[in-house]
Image 1 (spheres, chains in turn orange, purple):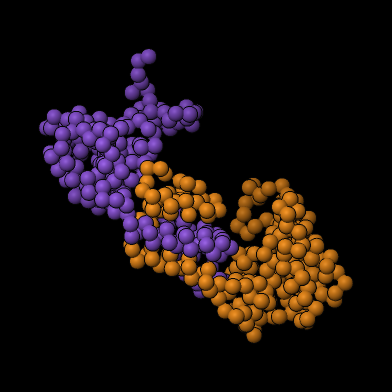
Image 2 (tube, chains in turn orange, brown; image 1 turned 90 degrees about the vertical axis):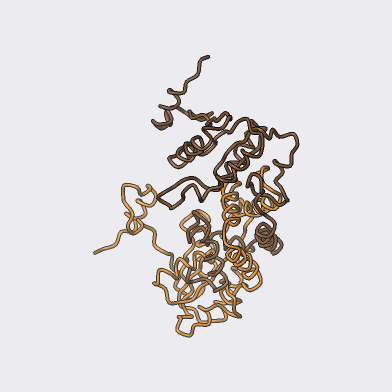
Length: 199
Length: 199
């Protein structure tokens, strides 16, 4: 990297801040920007500024939005009585793109992880409880990742909602569609057997 | 991606233009920018604009530079009689970082690739010939990649310089330092044997 001119070194340094992007990848990206059309580079720079200026959190579900409230919360056809709880906006998009959920969401912006100092107060949990006590909610689907952090966060929420008259569900664990049993890890296979369904 | 607000979708689209960056990676990068400090995002955007504005090609060796001539060509201590020919600025940096070459460079900005429509006229070959005919040059080291394109480009240059009173050399092929013979491909191994040296 020391062999590059100063502005290139600065760009490589800025690009290296991305998660999973080391100096080699950052260098490749920087050299791409250098050979790209002036117009493309300008649009990329403007997009970066634009997201920082326009994107905020929906005050209801904490999804990312460029409007007062997010598209899903503003959509009158969505079932407001079903809330799908996810850790992050990308999980929300994954559920949304499956096309199998017509309710609304609640984005926690994290998962419990005591080792990283992330306790219940770091998540949007109080906001979820407030929402449930104000609105009429029928079901809460806990769609956090099937990881230690995801499971413990789901368990905590289930406990917090225990005394409410709400159905609390958890997304299913099992072998992924299109997956090969041969390459399925033991834990997943065990869950797939444990949660087998009648046909 | 359709689940994200428009400014985020635009940023994902711009980031997807990077080579080797698909929609998933672009999404991860975009969400990182969203959670990054305002200041960091601004610096990244500015760096992108800055490289496009400030970086040009050195008129002597065609290396990337933000000055009238590149640091290496301006350096009086570098041996101007030895020219290391590379395909791209990243190859130049790789040679430079090895610390084993004290001469100057010539960046072709590409390699012969008839299948991609890249012929001799697409490379900075004429500029290399002009430079050699004007300046006193003792040795030309052909440091193009050991690929089909790199080899044919090296062969062409060797042919073009054949009648000049210049030593023409090619970088060595062999097993990489720290490499394991077990994981060395047959072609490399064959070259390592073919070009074995006395001890």
